Image (cartoon, rainbow, N blue to C red; front, side, top):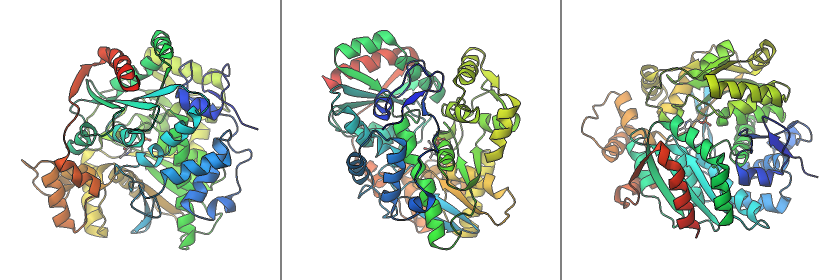
Length: 494
Ligand SMILES: *Cc1c(COP(=O)(O)O)cnc(C)c1O
C-alpha cells in the first residue's frame, strides 16, 4: 500500500512519491507533502541500530513507500558509498561542549551532496516504466547547482540546467560549476540574485505551454531544489544518525532530548529535522540560524513573514535568501494539514510580499522552533574564536549556526550544530576571519594559505579545480531563462 502525496495548497491531485519526485512541484504551484508522517514510522530503537545506510533504508522506505525494498536498497548503496570520504558519511565531531555534524564529506564538499547523490538514483528508478526523459532545472545560490551537476552528470535519460546569480557565488563555487564534466549538463549565470532565479524557475515549471512543447519531445521538467520531495527526504536520515552517533559514545541515552541548530536558507535542511521529530526522534528544539538576511528569524519571532526588505550579500551566500520555499511545508504541518490556509498565505505572499500566521499556529511553531541571527562580523568572530579556542575550523555557514547556538544557555541537553560546508569552499573569507590579509590572493592561493596555517587539508576535488578547463560562460537576463531551458532540453536530450 502506498501513501499518496498532494500539494500543500490543495488535495485535488494525488500522486505516488515516484510521480512527486519526477514532477518536482505540484501543478497548482504548491509543494508535495504527505499527510500524517508519524503513522507507521519505524520504531526509534530500530532507527538507531545499524549503519548510516541502514537508517537511510528505513527512512526512505517509510517516506517513499511506493519504492520497493530492493529499489531503495539499490539507491542507498549507489548514493552512500565511496563517493563520501568518511565511512560514517556524516560524522559528528566534538567541539567544546557541543557536537558538530559534518555534512560535507561528499564529492562537492557541501551538505547538499547527502541529498543530491540520492535524488538521481530515486529519479532513475521513478523513470522506469515511465519512459519520459527528465530535464532538471535548478536555481542555485552556489552549492545546490554543483551538487546537482555532480549527481546527475551522465545519468541516462536525464539532463541538468543550472542557473546561478552572476557575481554572487565564491570563486571556487563558480569554478566548480563552470568546469563541470558530463554530456547532459548546462550551466548559465543570470543577471539578478538567487531569489530572482528561483522565482523564474518556479514560473518556468508553471508554464503550461512550455511543458506541452517539451512533452511532445517526451521530456518532463523537474527540480533538484529542496522543493523536490526526493531531495528533502534523504536529509531526514542524518538527524537520526547524529542521535545514534551521540548515543554510541554515551553523550546521550536513547529517549533523551536533543537540540539541533541549523544554518538556514531555503528551510529544507531544518525542515528535515522537523520530519525526523514527527517520525519520533526526541528533538526538543530546532534552532533556525540566519545571516543578515533574517526574514526567518523575524518570522519565527513575530509570526509575520515579510519579504519586503533589502537583500544583503553576505559571506554565507548559500543562505542569502528572502523567500524560503520549504517554509510552506512547515505551515502545512503546523496548521493541522490545512491546505486552504496555506494556499491563502502563499497567495498573499505572492501578491503583497508578506503574510501573518494565526496565533495558534505561531504557538505550535514556538513549541519546537527557536531562532537567532549572525551578521558577517559575528560570523568572522566565531570562525576565529572556534579555531583559537577549539582548534576546529568552520566555514561561514556553520559559523552562523555556531554563533546562534553558543548564545543560548546550555542546560545539559545534548546539542548539535549542523556543519554544511567544508571551510575550504570559502577559503578567502575563512582566512580573512582568522586575521590574514587576502588582498590579491585568488581562491587557490587562499586554500594553500589556509592549509599551511591550520595544518588541515583541502578536499581533493577542490584542489583539482586548479587545472580543470572552463566549459561554461553564458550569462542571460531573467527574461531569457525560459528560452534557455527549452533550447538546452532539446539539445541535451535529443
Ligand atoms: C544550501 C546551504 C544552506 C542552507 O540550506 P537550506 O536547506 O536551503 O536551508 C546552508 N549552508 C550551506 C553551505 C548550503 O549550501
